[in-house]
Image 1 (cartoon, rainbow, N blue to C red):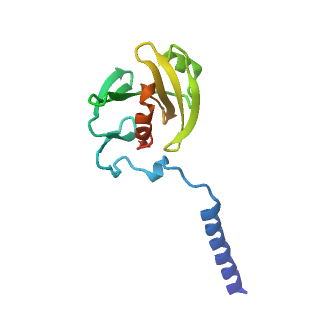
Image 2 (image 1 turned 180 degrees about the vertical axis):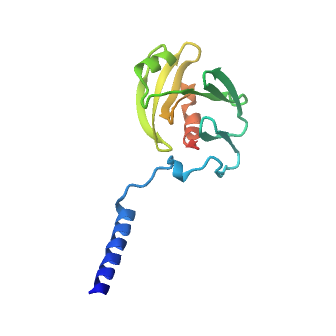
Image 3 (image 1 turned 90 degrees about the horizontal axis):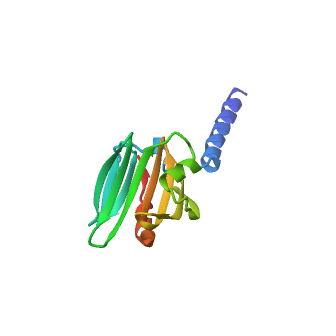
Length: 176
């Protein structure tokens, strides 16, 4: 009788472990416990990695592209990626942000035209992001990707005609 209860206990424990393995949802790549700030990633030939420990992201970008940073004050920063030979480029504006979702007020602050056409949502390293077309007085028509993660609002902007160039770069985004 004593051995039967031990065997039953072991079988139940194993059943719970196997059940958890098959039925619990998988963790997304953006979970902190799956990633460390010092983690090294494979960088394919012809690409470079850009990392920002302060703004907790990494992305890959094509060789021939120059990356620069500009301090915007109050914890905000703009990252510019520019390939002058191919006349391609994009910028990432990052600002501390205390809300979980992007408010209309914040959107209008950064996009005074208020234009947000064809919005589409997708997951970027486990974080919900929205891409859309807009219009800027300085740039003209743009393709943008916005998302919020761990107290920061990220706004990625390129000229609309550069969407196909930027899209594979965005897909390399990882949170550190």
